[in-house]
Image (cartoon, rainbow, N blue to C red):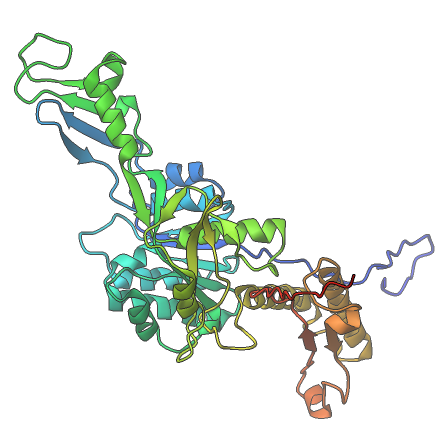
Length: 447
């Protein structure tokens, strides 16, 4: 509405016709914490969108390998930091936009304090929705549990993120993990087991220019010159046996990695193709040849349902003709009827954060029936769209959700005096068909 008009003339007024709308926030934006080759971006949250960006910002330009011809010995001078390989696993499984918080160059003994400080940096970032720390498993068991508990506490406090956990390898890995993780904030995280045999080469950045052949006691390959010297692989004939041996050696050096980075990629893939309400399970993993440990049907029963503490562990299993599959979809609060499933917890995170951001525009608006109607209509429209996409259960929208706001409904007269607008939202979230039972019986012949 324009101010009081005093000068004769023609005036234009724009009338808002469309109701306020809720913009859906991104659901799968992981934040990776780990050591890198470079330390100029230490303890800063950096957004990247590809493996190439990670290489440019955090990796060495060249990793050089030395091959001693006579002794058949490899002398390694390459990145000992694991995060690069985890990022390959992430992007290889459908990962996209993410954040990286570098802990700098890897020390001889990785530090719990580095991870805790990085979590403090992450707490100030609004966009990340997943916390992934695969290198935390190398801190030692108790330090790893301390870092995990801090991450779960952050997720519970901010209510906009979820933690993907690895079960550290040990003789009694599952029992140790369940005893060490504690009982707090379990609904905000999910654990995956076991480790993975990947097809990712330990020397992924190495090419012919980075392979150096050295003769320890004589001339270089294809030479009668007795003077010790180095020779680049690219200058050696392609058919030379030592060059072939070196390349063969490089290709054989594949890595065993914890699964969290791959799982983060799966979350991204499922969210983008199906929606955050779809359980991120029954999906095969890329860049993975097998699991370090084979889990049977009966063994998974012990992982999936923990009667004592409810700490479910999601199994990764190999199936003939299907590869390695994600075969579990439970949070660590596996016995909680409300928050048992990963997709339910993450869907609530998504809706809560989306509605929260959209509701900011109504702060300091008149706390009256007109504003209440605009707020409720905005939320109902948003939830109706989600219901149409299959996120909410119910034959009609009224069965799928409700939105309540109003005087003597959700708002008391005392609330009005204190400037409080209470809005109640109920959701019938679709839960996964975790157990499909096929009932067969014999039918008597009728003729």
